[in-house]
Length: 341
Image (cartoon, one colour):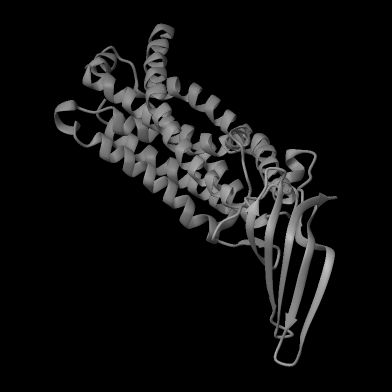
């Protein structure tokens, strides 16, 4: 029996890698495209983009590992069916439950790893990612450059005529409209430089003029040096343990959804075994063209069930979906596999 178990696990391992690697690559590209949107706000080097990608790896794994295992388990049994090896096993008196028990061990191991991934690694990665972005925003390394388009500096619209290699700017114009006073302010300066002091951005203007005008008044000032503070500050998220992260009120709505969704996704490798056996163990002549369709329908139904039920059922969605899914797939397994073999 140990040789047979090893043979099934070896087939599962090969197919798992062949499924996981393409899914992981596709998910990585999607997340990298999403991360690229941050470059519209702050400058990121290749190394910093790599760090950001490492921070989202727990999410990438959660979008790929559970479904990869289900697909690999189904295809493993489907391959054994195509090779008539499953029929030989059943002819020798081996019960279908033996296959379920064989696949349960790697499924349980994967479930534990997924649970540790979202409960322990996810808080660290999410916090590091948020703090990193907040820190980069607080630095004077924004994508400010001379161009025909303007930039935002706090409430000010900023136009730069020329940027120098020493991180200074020339021919700078700032514009702001105060809606409460119905007043518009225009400032021009020959030179400017961004300064980061105690995580507060300051724009140092040199040799310039300022104009303030409304329907009732017009005023002008000349200055040698002027500082304009940005409202952007570093707001870091702090926590000491994963449990403290999940219990804190920070971003509580997203945490509820993540906890419910990821718990069910962690259990999916074990919960999907009956369905994988029902789809993968087939009479090739009669069901060869339906295995792939049922496999992807099963993934869609499970994932959409989570998305639809987590809001109305909240934490009760975890036991409800798990119990209903196990009972439903077990009934299918009893009817399609146990009753026939």
